[in-house]
Image (cartoon, rainbow, N blue to C red; front, side, top):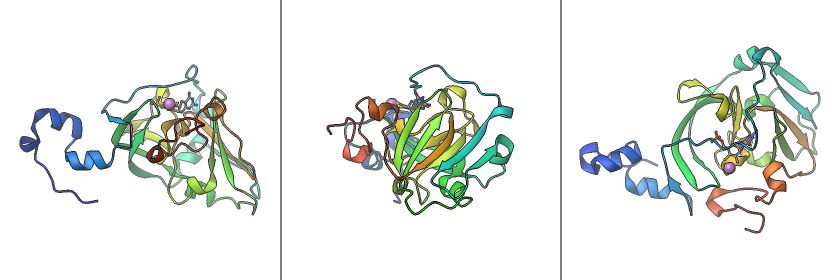
Length: 213
Ligand SMILES: Nc1nc2c(c(=O)[nH]1)N[C@H]1C(S)=C(S)[C@@H](COP(=O)(O)O)O[C@H]1N2
Ligand SMILES: [Mo]
C-alpha cells in the first residue's frame, strides 16, 4: 500500500493536477480495467432529484430481521460515523481516487437488528423509487456505508443528499442516492439498472458492466 512520496516539482504540473500526489504507478494499480481517472464528480441520475424534508426523512431496515428498525434524521446522525476515503468507479468509465466521505457503516446499522438465518440479499431503496440489489456478503465487514457528507460538506442533493449508500467495490450504480432503507431478503431481486441490462453484481475489477459480461 505504501508508495514513495513523489514531490510536485518532480511529477510536474499536469500530473500534480491529475494525481493529488499519488504516483503514476499507484494510479495505474488503482484504476480498474477500461476506466480513466478524473477529479470530477459528474451527476448521473435516472430521474429528478427528490427533496424530502429532513423532518420527514427516516432510514429503515426491514424484511428478514427480528424486528424492523427506523431512525429519524437526528437519530441517524447520532449513530457512530467515520471518515471513509475510497476510490469510486462508474460504469460510464470514470474512476475518481480518494473520495472522502463521512458516514455510518452498514455493520453499525446491522448491530441494532438480528438478521434471520435465511437473510442473504439486501435491496437498497430510495426516494423516487430507485432500487439496487447486493448480496449481504458484499456489504458486510465495512464494505458499504451510508454517507451524509462528501469532502467535508453535507452531501449535495444531486449527489444523493441527505444520505446515500456507498459501495466502493462495485460500480457506482450500486451506491443508491437518496437511500431510505434496506430490505433484507432470502432471494435476490434485480434493482433498477440490474433489470435494464446492467450486471447483477457489478465488480469493476472484473468489468462486470452488462448482464452478459
Ligand atoms: N436513487 C438513485 N441512486 C442512484 C442513481 C439514480 O438514478 N437514482 N444513479 C446511479 C448511478 S447509475 C450512478 S453512476 C451514481 C451516480 O452518482 P452521482 O450522481 O453522485 O455521481 O448514482 C447511482 N445511484
Ligand atoms: Mo452509472
